[in-house]
Image (cartoon, rainbow, N blue to C red; front, side, top):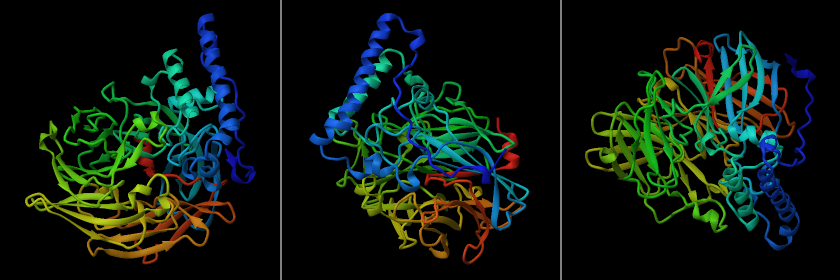
Length: 543
């Protein structure tokens, strides 16, 4: 075990490029010749893109320029083995025993081309809490992509979301295709980043990203993190899966979907309590290639939000940038599908003009005729990927009348709110409280608010202070709690003035979300996405 005070606070320097050597010990002479051509082309493109292209092409947009994106607390950090940390404020609650883990992008190597904030290899930052003590650890999710690029010493998979902006980007894609054709890359083993979220279901802990299948994670008693493999659910899962599966706390079932740029654009499926994947239900009634990131469940239904963001892979081949765009003439819809439907003939679509939800906070049924959906609505969604600071996320309560077909919406706060959580025991059923991050530059959040969904207003708030930013505020229920909001809100918080990061525990019931405890972390934790708290009893059950 390393002690935090012994750790250097220096940041990692970008790794120098190395020549590719994928499978070099197994190549025949002819294969070696083909590989040599790929190596030469890779080196030529690197020179061309860093030297000549600067003079003949305009600079990249800041949203995909790695020199701009990977700065400040978005810059990469190295892995860190388990390290004991100091509690510098208050005391960690004795009932708060378990591990908080947060996922986020952290490129293994400095990108050689365009790079968007949402890209980058998944890194898990965990803090294990045990009897008032804290142990911090950071580990990469060891995906297939990670393993290959760790071997060669530089990126070999092109960044897709950031798009292709020049012939050089197309050339890198061609090199990757060449590696696939020569058997150096096996796409059947995955090509995703697993950088978005975590989920615990069927007694397994997973790191997820929507471009791939989940990766199984093991947590050691010492606080370390290990990737144990990619999960295809006994060969029944195909290519990818949402990063936001929903677990019914009463039945133990898991509900999920996969999104695709070719029909069917979304395919729904479920996983039973024992971890067996059930049959696919392709949704052919979604006729546009909509990018669907999240969804909701109720006791009887699945709820999808069809936004104005669409996927268009042809934009890549035409060097028009990102393969997603906002179709502002399109009318968003909300789809309601019975939980156990066998075909999409049972889905009903309801028009919801101006409603673009990337995340869903919760949904439930009221009587036999209405469904309530709570979600942040992205206003000015055309700026989502290039200028997210121009998007206003308005938290809304949406009422869908199944009998009349009407959709009514209520704004719950005028603040810019995203990255929220609820008490997980209330997933799919009526709940009263939501905990939302406040921020203009998602996922960099300046504070947290508690929203009363019944009174439809803000009831508590805490700002982190000037120059301090956290992430998703995660609710953790107190052991033995009988009230929905009896528990804590946890988050990593970074001070951009001092460069230090802390783990903060707040009292969810207090009027000002009082800080119960703060732990000084051994180095900064980059801004990231979604987290999970796994209690000790659940950790012991993970297999």
